[in-house]
Length: 448
Image 1 (cartoon, rainbow, N blue to C red):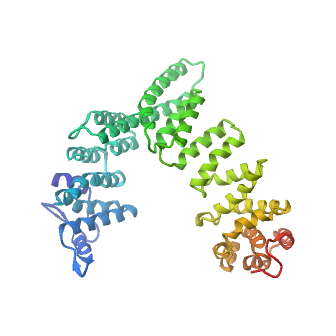
Image 2: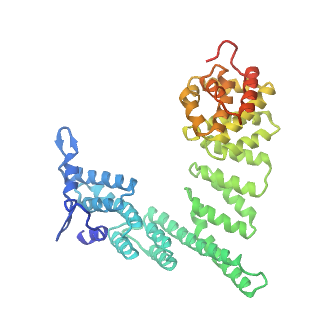
């Protein structure tokens, strides 16, 4: 285990504080780590036993990774390696996979890591039973070492640890798919080179033939995987790009449709995004685009494509669609991450105006009923009025219009914006005040 841990610690360097770490013949010892571990208390007793120590180390590693503290994570990992000798059978069996995932992440990003270190680490992990080669291949790809990545994946296809199992069969499919992804990367590079050649040039013909051969290899390696239930976004996108390049629109459409709608596959918002983008490129009918985005809306109502969905619904001749178009905007703005989305507020302000002029106030009242108790504080407080006006006057005006329609002219947000002195927005504010007075859904005398 000392040799193994050396790969994670050999690039450790001295820090300004000599008490932070100490080298010894047995490896590295961290006085500050022991302090952290001893500080963890359960039921008034210090955590000194083996299991609690490794548990503390794992927590520190995860925290360091979240903060991108790669050197500190490597130091913690050195102490965590003792879990390979844990008396708990379950923890001991789970340890190699955890060490592989965390260790490869550290080595991938550590500034002093290199390919030789990563290769040595991966080899040792293989010898203690880790079956996942994919991060190693991705590391090589990241460094542009395509041949090494391909050789690594080829070796992975033949490697066996213990008795063959169903999980190994799945892993084999995944390894082959990653080979397909590598081949796609080469194909994509050749496609870029092809775009720079003259079509009458001999090199153009040779390059085209080379690309076709590469795409056949990619198809063979990826197809088996994406027929298996799972989330295979990068593989699907790569394969569809090649199908479209060679004019196989039917094949691309079938694959994306199966990926999105096959009940055996897990729910995946991206599957519907990919299908929608493909149909949009094909200039599919509006009804077809709406049907795809309707499912995405049910899964992720705050998705960025929901504003596009609203536009499609708004243009529809179906009343049900136009009514849904209003609900979509309200649902987008239900999410904290969308509160400053000026496009969403503009769409809502415009659509509220259109809806009320067309005497569809019941649509607005239906959406407002469930939001009346919390939207005022969430969007339309005096604090937000001051903050929005200072940050973005256009955003503040759009929100003020919506606030006035929903809460009446007595709304704090609406009143604050109306009182602001702005020559450029004077006409806009005057029109807003006139519209709210006529069309607010709040009964006279009940302003908040």
